[in-house]
Length: 163
Length: 163
DNA sequence: TCACCATTGTTGCACACGCAATCACCGCCG
DNA sequence: CGGCGGTGATTGCGTGTGCAACAATGGTGA
Image 1 (cartoon, helix red, strand yellow):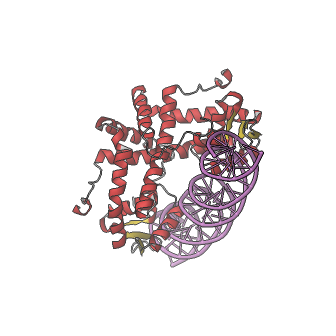
Image 2 (cartoon, rainbow over the protein chains, first blue to last red):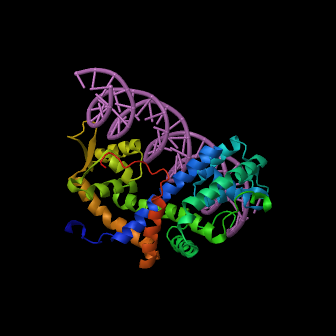
Image 3 (cartoon, rainbow over the protein chains, first blue to last red):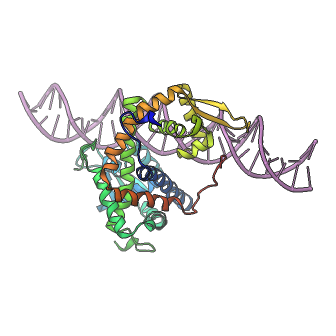
């Protein structure tokens, strides 16, 4: 057991549970929530997140690159995802008047309807599978901790086009 | 804004930050750690995790299905991953004597060497990007919270072959 | 002993995604 | 005005993954 004590000693039991637990919990939660959305509404989780972000904006439209950043996808990944959403009629691309390069993804009425139908499922899933396991204090702690992780200047990447 | 108050009201600010923060932090951490391992050792994170789990066993070998469960992969996914690891010489398949259907994935000397080399990078990454942002108390809290999430009987799946 | 179902690992197939290249366009500086 | 680097979105290509189907084997009950 001394073979690994070269430079960095292994994690202690709590550290290991905190880290591996994060991986496992994330995988579990995403799988559960995605399965629920998919089975009840035929909507993958990533698609739902795009619709959700669009719905939170004025006019229901966002620049493609902003959507990509919001849902943690590459631009190419978002292009294909919006392709699918457009094919299903939930969003439509509209030309950006101020910048001929850019496109908006805009929520359609069908997309808004779909989102509203799916949101109950998703919110209940988040509450049941995730929020229910934390006290309000713990949630506040978590919320701040995540921002500490995201904040540091490690490969954050510049804001984006709309910034 | 009253359009979503149909059945389930939206998350409050803290809930939202706790939930979306989890998604964002996970994505960020996995990306960072994977990039570090890949660039410094040419080893993807999932491959590393397989080697790590194997190293923690007696004899450095595990049943394929147990490895799959440990690293949160499907059996087919693990088959391909072990294909790659075997091609790179880090593991080898050995026939299970008790069960002609089964195979062990066994860590080779090269795999153990690779793991030891990569472990410093990975451990330092976990400490720097994740553990550093939490106090010991917070880590304990996290460790227990993850187990609350994983524990409930929601699609847990039966133990497995080695159980 | 044999029939039957469960389980293990692999494979065919499809899909979602990222990277790099590409094209069109913006803004700036000379 | 013209050139030039930077940016937004798309596309080609490769990769990693899951699902379903499959063959081989184990285990159990008649």
